[in-house]
Amino acid sequence: MATAAPWRCLWTLPLSATSPDLARAAPPNTRACANVPWVTVVAELTKLLGEDAVLAGDAPGAGRYMHDETETRSITGEADAVAMPATAEQVAQLVAWCYEHDVPMTPRGGGTGFAGGAVPMDSGVVVSLERLGGPARIEPEHWRAWVPAGAITADVRRRARENGLYYPPDPGAAESSMIGGNIATNAGGPHTFKYGVTGTWVTGLEVVLAPGELVTIGGVSRKDVGGYDLKSLLVGSEGTLGIVTGAWLKLMPAPEAALPVVGFYPDTATGTDAMTAVLMSGIVPAAVEFLDAGALRASLGALMSVTRGLPVDLPARTGFMLIAEADGSRREAQAGQHELEIAMEDSAVAVYAPTLPADIAALWRWRDGVSGAVTSRRGGKLSEDIVVPTERLADAVEFAVELGARHGIDACSWGHAGDGNLHATFMIDRTDPVQVGRAEYAAEELFKFAASVGGAITGEHGVGLVKNRQLSLQWPDRALALHEGIKNLLDPKGLLNPGKKLAR
Ligand SMILES: Cc1cc2nc3c(=O)[nH]c(=O)nc-3n(C[C@H](O)[C@H](O)[C@H](O)COP(=O)(O)OP(=O)(O)OC[C@H]3O[C@@H](n4cnc5c(N)ncnc54)[C@H](O)[C@@H]3O)c2cc1C
Image (cartoon, rainbow, N blue to C red; front, side, top):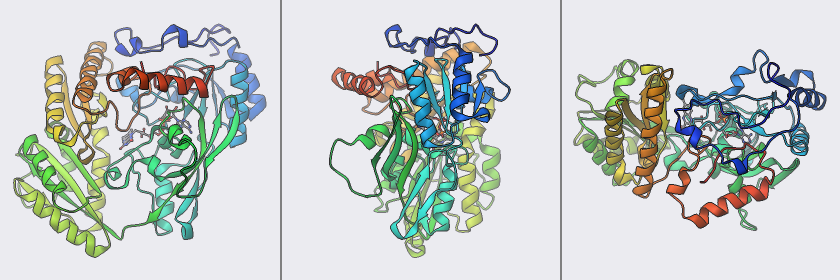
């Protein structure tokens, strides 16, 4: 950075010393130390990519590349430079130069990640894929698309729709996240329940591997079982094994209609029983979402305007909310919505089954806004996306609230009930290091809980920085060693997103 000494030893972690994140950083023997002054990095990358494609790390406008959504828990990083290559070939040249000169790289999509994966913690270069954009190339007759890594997720979904097709993955920040970031995190969303996570829809990847080679793995074929599944290895690798520059995605004909049912329940136990009733109903819902009492309280104002058509006084007696959706042809969706209503109404305070497109769109818009509404309660939040077997969902929701009470911070959960995937959240003032620290410790207990009931430490956001080492709660030593062996094989110098996705 321009104000710093020209020589920089890496791993200057700017995290609060009270934060366990510090303790989760990479051990010294995995650290790389660059021997290139930042001015040289900027000058050489400018020669490669052009004047307007490189920013010094402290240049005006570079600040937004130093954090992702974990800024809401006070995590920021620093880098020598931000590079914005415009083609896959430029990404390969950039990686080759950095690899040759031992300069760490932090790939970056839309910066909407909740795991600190795109935060540069090792100085070096932020590789922003934003210029690898342009519209998805849809081939409607073959139900597929070629999509550059920098394409915005919601644009890909819209382009598919315009062609009568459907790209189901719908992560909550779809208007800002990029396909490359979705692939790197194997993102999910409400409709993952029926249709699967991002990786389900990827048939081929174009990716730059160390030490700077542009490689295509897979392609347009919908089936491919030869060889080890390298495509799936790269999907979800969070920029630690390669940089995705584009992908072939498969698509499907768009369902004609999607009709939700909202159930309001007095408490978590009743609400999760209703979820079991939904799963037993014979319908395969497209989505099964939930909010607990705390999440409802945080987003109450907006909810009241969405559910204005409700016949009862809500949500005063509501302690849990379930949203299930039926889709298919109009007739199938209508029949499914009716079946879901029957399954959900027994123990409900009320159910709401909108049929007007505007009401349905408002409902999902509100659902997408829950994360922001919860953040605004205290100005910050620490939210972990643990997964539990569905029969333990109620326990997990209650455990998060109890943890919050024990640590003196408000807690709530919402998320993808059908997948047993919670956003267990501690609402904090992010400027208060004591609250941040307490929430971090509470999160450690959450991970232990998830692992102890046979769940997973992350169902969506990935390990990134904030879940470093937690995988060891879940995997045996042999699997952890394989995880590390794969990293060493694909990135022997440890320059691709160093300090992230560490198994132990
Ligand atoms: C309001 C809100 C709601 C959200 N809801 C969901 C949800 O429902 N489901 C869900 O899964 N997530 C959700 N997220 C988290 C986030 O949107 C996803 O993790 C998303 O996939 C990140 O994409 P991005 O482009 O922003 O990636 P970034 O945040 O920029 O990066 C994420 C990780 O991917 C790596 N990366 C980025 N691009 C590339 C590339 N081209 N090649 C290699 N590595 C790369 C980065 O290094 C980093 O490790 C939500 C976030 C917000 C703010």
